[in-house]
Amino acid sequence: MADVFRTRTRDEWVAAFEGTDACVAPVLSPDEAPTHPHNVARGTFVEVDGVVQPAPVPRFSRTPATVQRPPSHPGADVDALADWGVDPDRVAQLRSAGAVV
Image 1 (cartoon, helix red, strand yellow):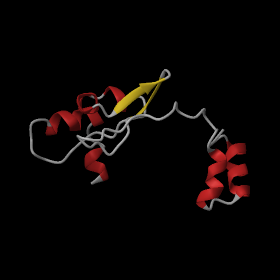
Image 2 (cartoon, rainbow, N blue to C red):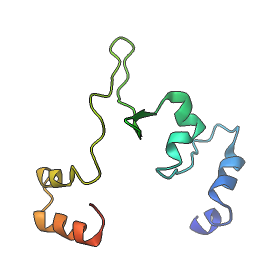
Image 3 (cartoon, rainbow, N blue to C red):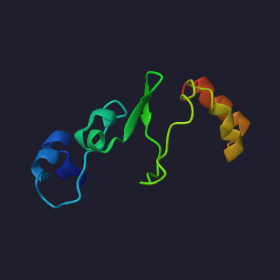
Image 4 (tube, rainbow, N blue to C red):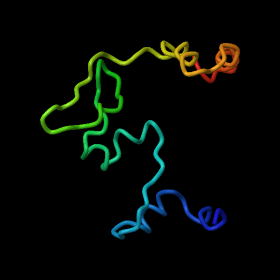
């Protein structure tokens, strides 16, 4: 199957399935996702303090969710990885490798 998928670009595959009832959607980059027509139509992303981020979910008609505070600065939440069970030495390795800031 991989050989078949390599015969076309992502956009060519999207065009080939356009208008069909097949469950097909492109894998978007973080830069593409907020401007994709599907996400724009559904208000999937919001801008808060100049930062585009996912809109709050779930969405209920009588109790709409709202953004409670501006987004964290890059790297501000990295230490929370320890709360999820990530070894502090591993976090240090990720920092030194540039995977997190």
